[in-house]
Image (tube, rainbow, N blue to C red; front, top):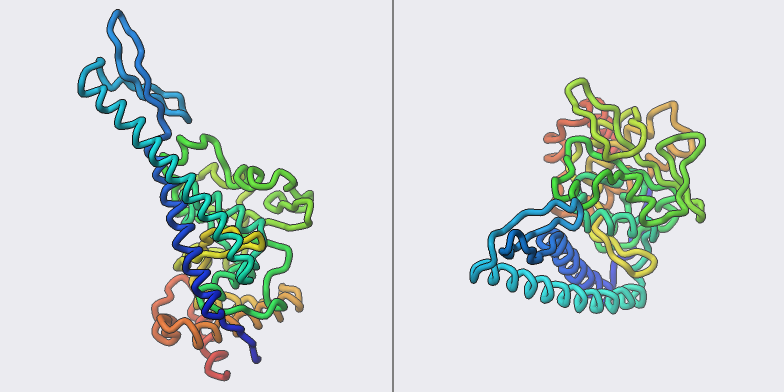
Length: 337
């Protein structure tokens, strides 16, 4: 199989690097603001004395920081000043980021479906990058961006997006405080309220543009404590435990709108092994098996030509989360090419 990869131009590479730096800076400031300023401070009179209280904006829990004094005045004034400065800094960075988004479109490096970008932009802000990961064909967007090339459109995603909730990654206390009772389903509806649950599958959602998102939480093992984060039924899929245990690959992507987001998917080599294995499963639709095989070979070519930090023979020996048979089958297919 021959694949055509179109390398980024020098201008596109520069644009991509600038976009990544700008967006990383924006997300860093947003996270800092959410962590440090999810509270408000105010003075309250209690029995003829004033006390400084800190109240969490999310949970409404209040805590006294002490009676009004020179020390508590310093705490109050410092809090107000730092909050104002960071808020202004975020505003300035957002203006620069919006300008960068226009450049992204102008240089034609914006090509990922907006629904994927919008979902993961929210995931980035909530600090759930290693908890919520992309599996399936949309992973190819991450591998091509990492390689600095464009894959032919015929190999890229259809209208379905597969999202995996990694059970071994817990949501933080800060997340629980910030958005109590929030679920993966809830986050999806936050970014696009036109999503509706499918009648055929409770984990499948589709929107007004006929984009289909599947929110997958594997069935837990005996020793696993259940979680409420997913918000949809647990699902058993053959090979899903391999994906859940895979090494992660985090990559900036740029959407059709020019907006950026970091998405997390699985390691490229493990993706190639998994897709080769999937292509041999007789229960799969023949057309899907053909795409699985082509995607396995395509990602392998990307690794060989552009991902110089991945040595296929060496890394195959270190993969412990997949069956020996699947790895050997992949090795044989690679050796024949």
